Structures are given as structure tokens and as C-alpha cells.
Image 1 (cartoon, rainbow, N blue to C red):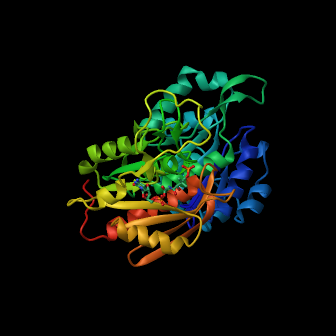
Image 2 (tube, helix red, strand yellow):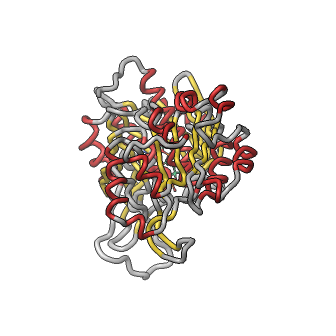
Image 3 (cartoon, rainbow, N blue to C red):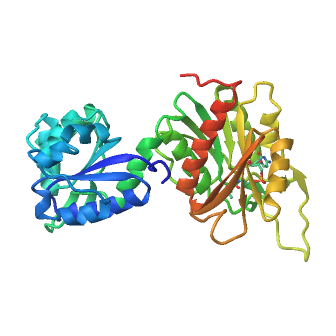
Length: 406
Ligand code: PMT
């Protein structure tokens, strides 16, 4: 998470057994640097006490619209204006129905009717109530009104049923709320991201490959999509699902990756090269299977074409962001690669450690550009990707020779 710092969030809690998860959500939101104020319906107070939420949020909890003291301090109009986002989690079937019909008969519903801030709801109810036609009509109506519906998840329910209607876990909700602030910083831009490793044939069944899992590149594709970009992901053989809304082109070799990039590049504004592309490839791959007939076997390798370098030489080159995978002297090698390949930015990571780089879910990068540098400390690849995409957006806009074409 990286977009919540300083954001003002109203968390509405309605009557559902999932209200206990709201306590953890408040904790996560506050930990992420938000200022959070809690509004509870009467039903919510049957499941969790205002005192708990007050302690976790560090703010008084708002429970009634007819509270003279509250109205004199932060009344429902001030609350509605104060919020950057209103989140209702859990949102009961009853609350969703009242919201869909514009009711304003308690503090939370009145606030939702008054606010200009985006509203996000996390439904929580019995699976039969969720699949009920009227609930589905209400949900569809809320979605069409621009309200974000988060979940629900499917699984075991408190009442013993199994099915859809479980509120999403608090960390999933915090992540979705975080993403909502990341949106649209790259709207109007088309981005190519290369990901994963290439495979270079030694013979018909064997290849030279590397440890890249594609996780870093896929996280970048997801983050760029969240930020509003149109994303083309060109990837080597990986075992990952395509992020939603992203176009994917699968390749195997460095040569195929180069061709796929060159086919697409003229219509794109930014190229991010996170793929681990083979530097050397077998000069003459053997047709068939090499037999085990001798004690020593040598394979001759030739340099492959450097995709980032070639794109860097194009007359109408896009904004290019490379990666540098290093085991030592990271800053020196990374800056040298950026210069040699005529890149606008480079994200350097140390590889060979167990907690970052290849294959694992976390990474840490130092990002360099011509007159600046930023360290993104060890975090999940999801978080690093979001931070890096935000930085790329800033640098792209700072490059006065480029414009965002809407
Ligand atoms: O996929 P994961 O398991 O999540 O791991 C992520 C990662 C460690 C692979 C990723 O963060 C990373 O560092 N990617 C770049 C790996 C690499 O090949 O670095 P390099 O220093 O060898 O290459 C420098 C740049 O030139 C890279 O942008 C690379 O894509 C590009 N290159 C390299 C060789 C080549 N023939 N063509 C290229 O375009």
C-alpha cells in the first residue's frame, strides 16, 4: 500500500456479524497513514462497541444524526465534506437497499446522500440474501450510480451456510481502498511491459533459462492498469494469471520477445523492461535430442540482441524504463546500463539474496534517472510496482518533450 497516507476516510459500519472485521480494517487504515472516522448504525452497535472503534481510530465514533453536541462539532454535513472516501464495511442487505433507494433516515445513509466523495461498499450477508433478486437489483443500481462494490467473497458463513456473501478480509479491503487513490495517474497512456525470463533452445528438448518468475513484471502490469494505462504485457513462459484488463502476448525466446516489442512499440508511450532476457543464446541449437555419448560437451553461445538498447536507438523512441539485476556495485552498473541503452529511468535490484529479486514475492529497488534517484525499500512486489508506476508517471510528465494524449 502506498496511496493512503494523509487520506481522510469515513468508515461506516452496519449491522452484520462481519462488523468485527471492521476493527482490523480501522487498524490497517490508521497504520497506513489515513485519518479515519467511524460512523456506526444502531445495528452495528449490537455486534461491536463504539469504544473499540474509538480506541482504534483515535477519534470519537459517530452514531446518531440527532446528537446536538456532534452537530455543533463535526455534524453530518461536515463529515460528508471531510471525507476523501466513504467506505461502508460491512454493508448489510438492509443498508444496501436503503442506499440504493436514496433513504436518509440515519447518520450513515444521510452522510452517503450528502457527500461528494466516492463511496465504496463491502457487502456482508447470508448467501440467500445475496443471491436474492432484489438485492442483486440494488447492487446493480448502486454499481451504475458509480458506487464501488468490493466483494463479497464466497465460503463458510457464520450461520452455517456455504456460498457468496462473506465480507472480504480487512487486508483485501484496505488494498482495494488504497488502489482507488492510485487510479488514473497514467490515464491516456499505452505501456508495454516485458516480464519473465526467456528460454533459448540447446536442442529440441533442453533450453537455457533463468530464475525470473514474472512476478515483478505482472505486478507492474497490474499497477499500470490500476493507474489507468492501457497495458500490453509481453512475457516469457510464466505460471501466472493475466491481470484483468491487460493484453498479454506470450513469447519464448529473446528473438520472439524483441519481435513482439518492435511490432507494438510505435503505438506505445512507455516501455518497461522487467524481463530477464538472455544475454547469450546457443549459436546453433541441435535439431533433435543431444545424446549422452561424450564426457565433455561444449555449447557455443552468441550474444543476443539487446531489446532495450535497440528501442533506445529508435528515432521516435518511447519513454524507456529498464531494470538492472545486479549482485554487487548496483548503482555503478545500473547507471552505466541506463546510459548505454539510452533509457530514461532504470530500476536496479540486488539478486541472489533469498528475500528479494527473482522468484520471491518481495523486492527492493533503487530507481535512477538522469538527475535523480529514489530508494523503494523492501516490500511486496505489489507495493514496489505501485510506487514505481507512480514514479514513472511523475517522470514521464516531467519530461517536457512528452504529453499525455487523452
Ligand atoms: O520475475 P521475477 O521472479 O519477479 O524477478 C524480477 C527480476 C529480478 C527478473 C526483475 O526485477 C529484474 O531485475 N529484471 C531485469 C533482469 C535483467 O535481465 O537485468 P539485466 O541487468 O541483465 O538487463 C538490463 C535491462 O536490459 C533489463 O531491462 C532487460 O530487460 C534488458 N535486456 C537485457 C538483455 C537483452 N538481450 N535485452 C534486454 O532488453
